[in-house]
Length: 104
Image (spheres, rainbow, N blue to C red):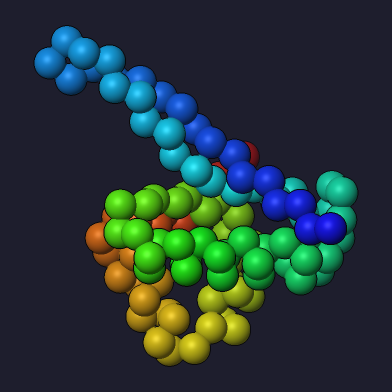
């Protein structure tokens, strides 16, 4: 059975004196922690990213943050030009954020 874990960032802001909660879904994979880099990529990352792109296409109100750039590049390179253009549109309209990993 496949288990994919999505994390959610919850933060509050005040708009006109009223609290507003924002929940932002994101995913996280630690290469080499529970699985090898290759296992994470084949068993989790490809499925997560493909499903996210499908959901973003279905609903333009959805947002997603991807923070594991080391997995992003191989996934990106496997995509068709059509999917790459779709993804560029998600980034441009703010539905998708791809965060660079921070260097210490």
